Image (cartoon, rainbow, N blue to C red; front, side, top):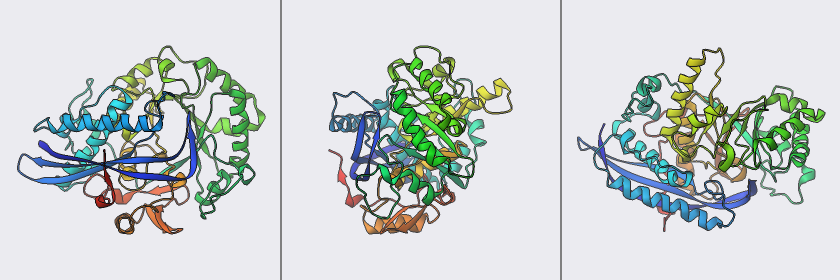
Length: 448
């Protein structure tokens, strides 16, 4: 299906956190969320609006400490403005060929957001779901690196639920003894309370770059997680805090030799981007008997193959890095694993993004990772942000009514519903890109 992009509007909405979150070099308490609204017109004259949303997260796309949070926001706004001009000028084409991925995390932010909004419009024109659109290759994907992508995409099957992997940030309280003051809004605050409330069995644990301090904090976390009678699983996120793999190897050696961490170490499934992006892909990795994946180093379409040659086994999927990149990487994993002919997948993808907010962003990301076959996803927006509490009541009611499996009303607002550690997502198989309803555009401000 060929179409032209006729109109692109950019909006913002402020997001306030109910409790601070520290990842890497920043402690976040608030951040704007960007929204794109795109109108497309097909060759046969049909028109539809599509939309997408993404947090303007500081200190992840560019971690230069000399830049303020506002500098980071403006970098991402500039990426969106540049992409808007390019996409409007492109003319009639398929969704696949409209996509203009750039090199660089900042540079690709705009194309990644617009691709989702544009695809949403196309799916609404066709009256099909995201899952149908990818399976049927409505996007017009072509062969890539010798892979027949339409054949790969036709085999993908979404699930009806997915496990929520809970992130434990660097300043998150583990038990009540770690708190000097409470939010007292009735929602879980400590890791101990999270485990009791949501019954999660998948966790993501941040490390800070100091091996001894990381061992002590992980030991405190293990003291809580080890009380879970069933098996639990955890990933370690380095957030580029280590200078090189020698530091990571030292950390891993200390973790394995600490008796308090025996069960936690055995439960670790992979280690995510432990080394700074400037050095992560300089040399082969070795010395760690767990898979290591890239996240911030995944700044271009060729990043995963380059990482593979150095010993990395996986890559994260994030909608802010591009949904088509995730689909390509999924096909790569299938092809590479077929070449190894092992019984278990050697190369894999993970679902990562703690900044995803309830509504369009959450639903589109969940639909993508589910179709990729990922069974658990980092999901913490419900923990650090008070659900949809700051949104208009009509918008809250609309999303709850359209997606009652994914949301619930509690503690004064509509919010994500987690039952036995899982998110129910069957309602995402609706027409359009995983949402039956739109946000309240009148409640937003135009992007400056």
